[in-house]
Image 1 (cartoon, one colour):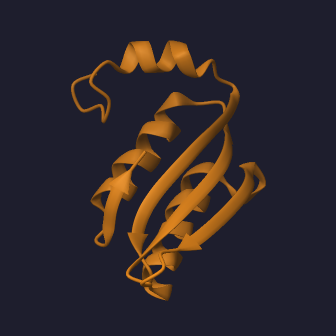
Image 2: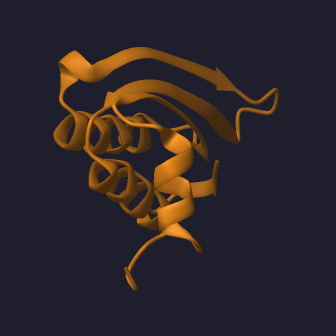
Image 3: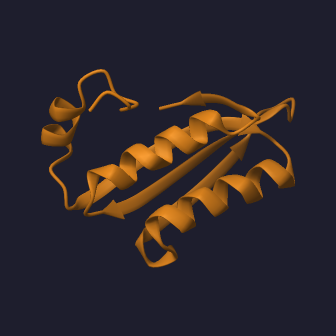
Amino acid sequence: MSDSVFKDPEQVRKNMDLPGVVSYSFIGASTPEYHAKLEEIIVRIAAEDNVQSRSFRESAAGAYTAYRYEVFHTDFQDVEAIYREVKDLPGTRFVL
């Protein structure tokens, strides 16, 4: 899989043991626009019913926010799609 966001997608796929819950952590802009675009990506790819939890914590200076999601997945391609789109979202500083 040459267009994978992971260096070794087969190993990641095996370690994820899907179906299951995947924890996502993103550091991004502290703006309503960024938050809305991030939410749109997660919900469009995973579906609202699969988002088990969300949390947001703004930095002390307010320059960025830590966004955390717990999402149930059955399909590894959905995990890759979320990472790919969030990584390319303007305002994203870090993807875990």
